[in-house]
Length: 313
Image (cartoon, rainbow, N blue to C red; front, side):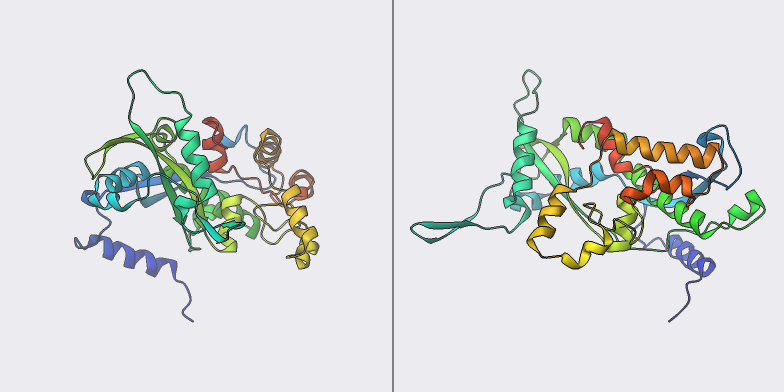
């Protein structure tokens, strides 16, 4: 197995991007931006997190999600889309019918989203058909970045805890870039698009699925890797994982789901203040006392931050 070489890979990427045949160009809708994250240091106190040294990661290639949605709905391919969701049922006999779960457009989530957007207040004269753009995301674990500059700022290399913390913050910073104000406005008010079939509609983006492996899921969910509560969805303890599939397991998972609320936000904020303003270790006992019960990490979740503002949590 070839060892990952950060310097070599950066050189190869730069050479590839210089080639005008590569698809990651402005004329193809791609943007080049940078993201910034604040760096903590154990036993070093800052007035606030905003006063901590800042690391800027440049050369982030991304597309506007609203541009992607608009482009797809303007294309004639959209005439093949199921814009109105429906129930699917299988009539086994005269007295026995069961629900069929198949595509997204016949799922309970799509039906609920369709009802939700059509129940939103309408401006006078706005008679546009309202439809859902179901977003189904994928990502895979990658070598996100190296943090070699840490040693230049603090005269010592970052610890494994700091490195892991920076990886979490970088993942969320990338999503902060993608979940921009334009997309948030579209979530609330929709995007008016003259669709490929000639009909103008108001299109509301909604996230339906996010496919990722476990290491990536915990980065997205802002929980610790295989910790006391290892599941991104619920608070089942690690020692109870072997009960998976039992009736009691399903009951417990439904009763102990993660809840994104102000209480959770306050916990994360309290831990972050201790790290940046009091120089407490990221994995120290004071931080564990606050977060360990739910296997949380001291990182702001951008999905939570963005959608809480627009009351779509």
